[in-house]
Length: 579
Image 1 (spheres, rainbow, N blue to C red):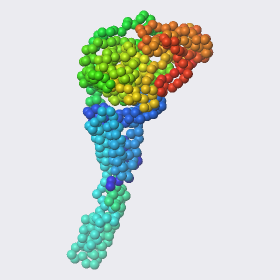
Image 2: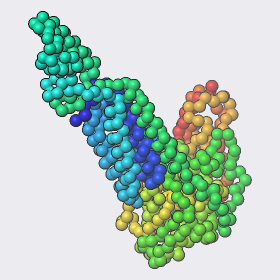
Image 3: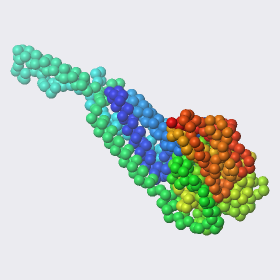
């Protein structure tokens, strides 16, 4: 058994870290060839998202926003780093412990990879090759960082530097006893003295060597002397290997088919174009959310860590289940159908009162209702279970999609093909429902079914099966905590109540009377609406509240409720100070 007790703890940690880096680099390279979802760090991150309780997910979204996935991956890497260092320290006693540790991580990675939707045996290759590379690097670095010498300890059968001591025979130093054939007694005495001196010198040399180089064989265990220079050279080589494999993997995975393909998409003109935006739809006040949210600023909340790269030439949408005629559409099929353009505001159920997870865009796509009528919906169907390319599922009420609103299989956003982050090549857009029950990105499958038969991703995790959007309003300016100048200032924001529409917005300052804000124009009931109120701000601290009423006469409730299970409620309230 290999024993490296002579290696300091810090050096063992270095060995573990470098071996872990090699494992991840090699695994990343293989995943770039097999598929990005096979990278074990991503698979473990996805599994963490799936298994995390709803309160933990909401805390992550509230705390880290759209960076929650990046923080999760960073956390997984930090854990792996600490464990790799620990394995290196433990391997000083027995390198087999470190090898077993890499094997355990390989098993965990395999479970995470192979339990992903659509995973096959080949997806496990990245984890297996990475674990083997890490184990090999660990062993090689320990051998590289130590210097075993060909010696055997005391008490073994063969000794280094053993003096035989028989007259006229070779001792361990290569000297010979006696004085030749005719030495006589005096010669014998002089020869004996010389031989004894030589033996003593050999013993001293042996002791010095044993003290300086303790790598010997004792009880069948190989002990090794630490060589700092050799270890640092080996570690540098390991880092080079890890870096080279990671960079190569990045280059290979950088061939993003979705990003490339979307640029080549020629968008047909809509058969049913959106209404022209009315004059006064956007107040154009500095700091107020614009009526149309630019694609780069549109919020993104989803469950995937690696954004799916879907080639539109390979994309199909299968519509099946409780239909008379199952349908399968290609991307070219969608482009050849009558297209509808519509202005629609999307909202995430994870949006806190006053939160940022809402945005408005002009969408282009095929009406979902038209396709479903062709498939022949059965009367008792009440749910559309859509599936994303990454395995996410979403349950949408059939009656909402079929009631005449602009529910779309969208292919474009604000005049260009969907950005990959927002679902290219095709996503669902359904006004009036929170995204978790309607806005499936990278949609590839639509099963017509029933809510009492199937469940979507979020339902067993504590969220409501149906998620109609609740009327909400937000103060965009002034910002919470702002210091304002005394005198005339503008309070402004947005309000939304898709698919009903916003009828009124009221503002209250310091608990006084509610004041009606002026409203911007809107093209229809499916978008948010800007509002503004001029205020003569007196000195001191002030509290500003806002509430909206929809076109059905319902005013948003003051009662505060969390985002789970079906969306937050309450009035957005901020505090400011006027100097």
